[in-house]
Image (cartoon, rainbow, N blue to C red; front, top):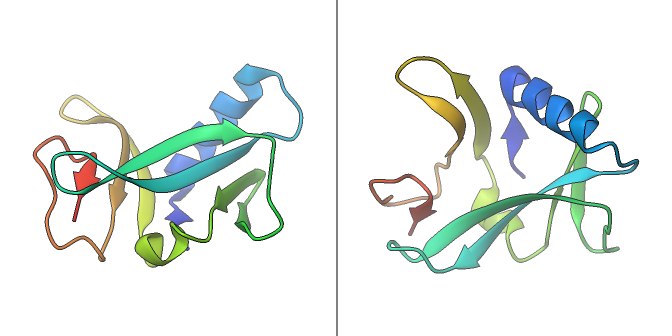
Length: 106
């Protein structure tokens, strides 16, 4: 299952609070596509299936579907807010190669 750094957890909480909807969870998924074979997908979701993997990081609930879970085992979601880097990034030890944009892997 993917983990969140403290920085990512705080940013996700901030974004969820801005949505103003109760019960939102961050859904992280892996989908076929992208220039390297798979791409990451992240969005807020209120629907959690019985077979989803869910874990809480503080006030943030992260949900991963059972197909994506093995591809995200050991991965870390981070958030950077600096001059050289800004936004979310996933460090995934399961990725043998990634594309230049960092949003797809194989």
